[in-house]
Length: 465
Figure 1: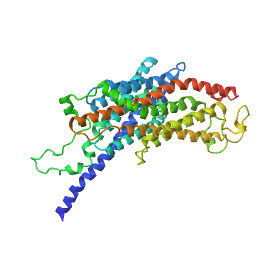
Figure 2: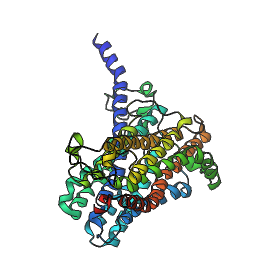
Figure 3: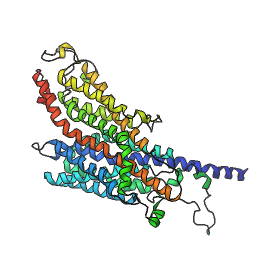
């Protein structure tokens, strides 16, 4: 009986190891997503404290996104051969830490903008790296878990970054960002310590289980594994110098543009035009009754609340794969962009013409002393929908891109297929940053136009903030 129990324990051990490995995989990729995006959010949240009042805050936003866009666009095109993930992670760590440190310990604008650029470069390269890493996992289910966890982490970064800076702001730029500079150090810790060996994630890993050796002479494990820092194609690609040419990469990009990249870019343009151009003008007479009267004590409370609402629902939507929800069918990938266009149109109409406000709250009428504008609830629902659309577009696009192309090839063909998968998902990653950049150029004049329209109708709140 004792021998039987020992045999059952040894037989059950691999499944326990695998469960632990899958948990570590999820936590690792969620941590990667959180760390990669949280500093981006902190920098935007700290924009008022980083530059003087005479400097447009849009400058901070530009330097916080443009280097990331350059990394996402040119790095996949210019890189050759096998991806060295360990080196990439170390480079991201150094750039991110150095960028935040420069921002924290500089007092003039130019060094701080340089530091913001370094942090942005790290963020763009980090997103590219970890999305590509998710395609190298041994099974489709492990890739889905990694992508879902990464998306959840990036979604939660919006809430965590804003909340963290709220707590650290009292320490000032030097103290608050100085402490924040410790966050990038968790990149290598997570990658080299927490992230499991990919062989433990293989569905057949249990078949190669060997008991722990008891003899002194048998000191080496017979289980063949590779660490995630060792790309499975490394040794073969060195011998045969397998790489994708520039023409190969162009041919891989062509079918992605209309199918994946354009819808994702459009969603982000609409999303960030709402966040930066429309949301600052969505202000109302302060409610005196109901739940809204508890949340809004000043006209300046509206914009942070819309931002928090948006970030919360982005997190929920990006976590859809992690929650076990089925992915959106590929033919429906343009749907979030279409819905987002409707959200942008409705919010713009409200901001400019007050079309959804009740007559007593429509300028130039003087709002009543008691009550609440019903439009606040309507805007809240639209902002929730905006977050859901943005998150759904992100996670579902990368889910389907990761499944593009052939798979399961052997030898040199298999190595090439892996490289193609890495390139596809890396190239698609430029779409969101490009959309944010376009949105930043559109939103500044658009916000002014909406505010002018409100002032022309007799409501000057947007200008008095």
